[in-house]
Length: 423
Image 1 (cartoon, rainbow, N blue to C red):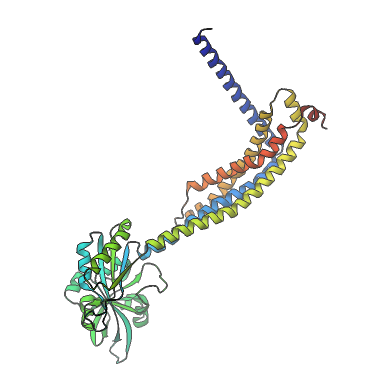
Image 2 (image 1 turned 60 degrees about the vertical axis):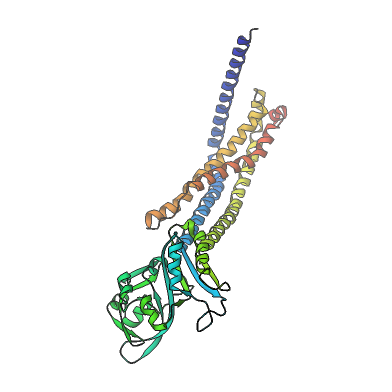
């Protein structure tokens, strides 16, 4: 036989085999659907377990994503681009009253010139000064001498009035921004504080604005409840020195934070004694930790929800085993008519997958209804990810295959003669 004729014959036989395979699959699918219709209540109750399990998977992913978003938003509120530089000790023999090698305003200027990634910066001169309101009673309050860019570097929110600017800094204006608790305690409300005056060590200052941190840091900050911010150019007259313990920097790009922190330390260290130690603090490590925690929490919750899926899978296996036993005679007739073991196995496996996938689809709908309802009824934009849908449907399909294999194999292994005799 010519090679060309042989090729055409093999191609024709392959086409016939493919067509027969398609017809077999179509027939098996119809049989599975018919079986589902014949026992709707039984299969619906079985699918209910899968629906609950799949819905739990969807909700677990939703809760994890929401928690992750909340944590990262809180960290972003503090300032993910922030770099805090502090004097950590050393420098014995430095020329200062306390024999310490503190940071200075010139250090900040040097960093601004040598580290291009820095977008904003401010020194922080902290001191406790007596304040009074003209009634002869004075009380010490935390006063921070900062620069106008302190608001950007520390990601502060101005509530009433304004934050002092470069002109106030240059002209040594006696102005102040105060915390909301201070304004409420001293003037009755935040808005009422703007325009009011008080004295710091007898020097009159005018309140031009109130502020707060963007998120609650639970006291882990240099800003106390009762805090006053004044221009650094004015604050230095109260101390008579240029030394500061902290300098805050804001980096233009979050990805440059770690490199910028190293460059900041290098730029400052070469201006001081070799024995002096300076450290930077960033939120990069905190962000990484938060992400790892949310991933671990998600994995743990998914494992818990997997138990629900496993229970649903056991229910499918029990129903399918009972179904195989009840349809023993049908299996014998099909085998007598020429059905192969593979076709019998595929039929019952497809039925198990249909039940599992049906429950999975219902579970996906129920699971997604919660986040979409929250988004519709509130202004909170909770995250809804398509991965949760894919995970839920994939999990339900896998459960159907895993727990449907045993009943399908048992059906395929039945002896046709014994099956036909079964009553």
